Length: 163
Ligand code: PNS
Image 1 (cartoon, helix red, strand yellow):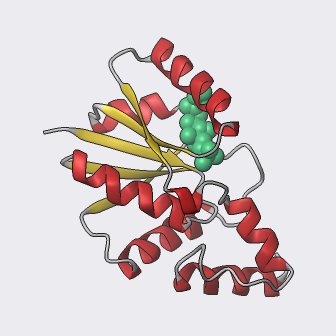
Image 2 (spheres, protein in one colour; image 1 turned 90 degrees about the vertical axis):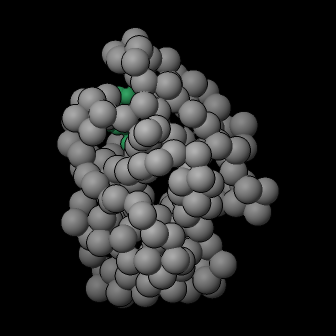
């Protein structure tokens, strides 16, 4: 039984993330989507909201059999607790490489038992980021091709409230 964890900020989840989930799910018997409690940047959505939005988005897209969890602290500690074999990450354009390389090697120093596995993004999501989606939404642009409807609604509600 191969178990993997796909960690991220998911602030919010996009079609790019969902594409990675769909593909990783084919290779692993169990896949956890792990929402980090304290991302590098101040998140738009609270941890609870990000977990809820992620669950709703996966359900809307018909992606079943995924457990959405959250973690606070080190990813490798979360991975140990769940007994995972691999850490899944998506790679978009070149810009991701340096950051992902550094993170994978650091995680390997901390916990050599986990393998980091990278999925190349689908071409149409190469430059899709949660930050871009939020900016486009904030200024009234159309984000319907980037995120599921439930995520779009959550973003509009959040931005309209102005918090
Ligand atoms: O979606 P993101 O923001 O690119 O995800 C980054 C994430 C959550 C994978 C990374 O910041 C992380 O693993 N944070 C937990 C803290 C940790 O383990 N740091 C050491 C790894 S370099």
